[in-house]
Image (cartoon, rainbow, N blue to C red):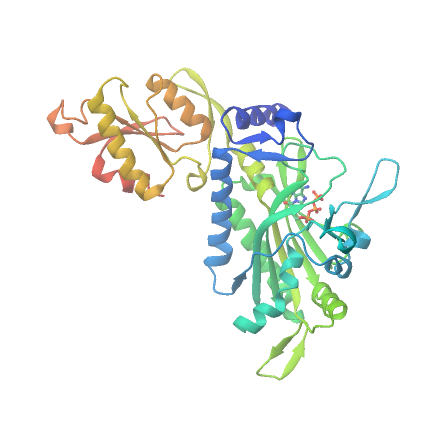
Length: 409
Ligand code: ATP
C-alpha cells in the first residue's frame, strides 16, 4: 500500500472529512497553500501541544518566544539568507526563495521578507532572554510559528508548501560540549517521533555531506521518513556553530555574548538546532495511520492515530435517534465528558454501524453507545454503556462513572 495510491486516498480523506482543503479552492487554488478544517486544526494543535510538553514546558532549561514574521531586513542580510537562500530554477538561474514584501507607505516603504525560518527571531532575542532570565548554559529558546518559502515547485500535498509551520529550538552550548549535546538531541528527537506514533523502521538518519549543508552548518543530520512518494526529510538537527550570534553581533553592533560568572569569561555560545515541520509531521502521521482492513466481514478505512493526537477522543451515540430518553442520557454523558476532555462529540445520525465507520475514518479511539440497558431495562446494567475500541472493534460494557478513566490516556 506504500504507493502514491495511498497519497491519493489520504488527500481524498482529508478533504472529505474536513482535515485539509486546497487553499483558495473556490478560485481554483494557489499552488503551495493549504487550509486546515476543524479536524486538521485539532490534529495540528495536538502535535504542537505534544512538542511543547516534551521540549518546552516539560523541561526547565527552555525559554519560549513568539517573534514577528516580518523583521528588520538587515537580519536577513546578516543571517546570510539574502545572499544564499536560493534554489536553482529550471533554466539554471539562482532564485531567492524568500517572499519579499514592503513595509510602510510611499517613499518611506522598505523592502523586507516573510521569515523563511523561525530561528532568526530567536537569535535576535538572545539578549532579551539573557537580560530578563539570566539563564545558565546550556539552555534553549523555542518557537512554534509560520515560515514562508517561495518554493519553485511546491508538491506532494502539504510536504512542500509555500506557507508552513515550524517547531524550532535553538539550544545554546559551550563549544566544547557541542558533540555531546548533538547526540543527546538526536535521541530526544527520535523519542518524540516515536511518541507521535511514527513507525521507527520508516525513520532514517542521513548525515548530510558538507557540500549539501546549509551555509551556517558544521554538521547536519536529517531525519528522513519513508513517505509514499519516497524517502524525504521530515525534520533536522544542525550544529549552527556561533555563526548566527556572531554575525548579528557584528551587523547590529550589539554584543550577543554569554558571561560566565564563575570564571569571568565572556564568549559567544554555540548552537544546536533541532527543527521540525508541523505540516510534514502531520503528513507522516496521516500516511502511517491510514489503514484499510476488514472488521466483521466488512471493509473499512481506519486512521490508527496515537490516542493523544486524535481530533476526536470519544464519540457518544444514543442507540436510536427517535427515543428521547436515550438521546437525553447520551447528551448528559457527552456534556460531562466534554467538560473534562473537550474533544468529545455527539452523533445520532444513521445506524450505529455507519457511525462507527465515520469515527474510524477520522481516528476516534473510543465510541460509546447508550442503549436501553443504560436506562435500566436490565436492572443490573443500569448506568452502564458499551465502549468500542477503534483498532480491534471490540466492545465492552462499563459503568458510566468509570468512563473518564476508561477513555483517559
Ligand atoms: P528541504 O530540503 O526538504 O527543502 P530544508 O532542508 O530546506 O528542507 P530546513 O531549512 O531544514 O528544510 O527546514 C526545517 C524544517 O522545516 C524541515 O525539516 C521541514 O520539516 C520544514 N520545511 C522546510 N521547508 C518546507 C516546506 N516547503 N513545506 C513544508 N515544510 C517545510
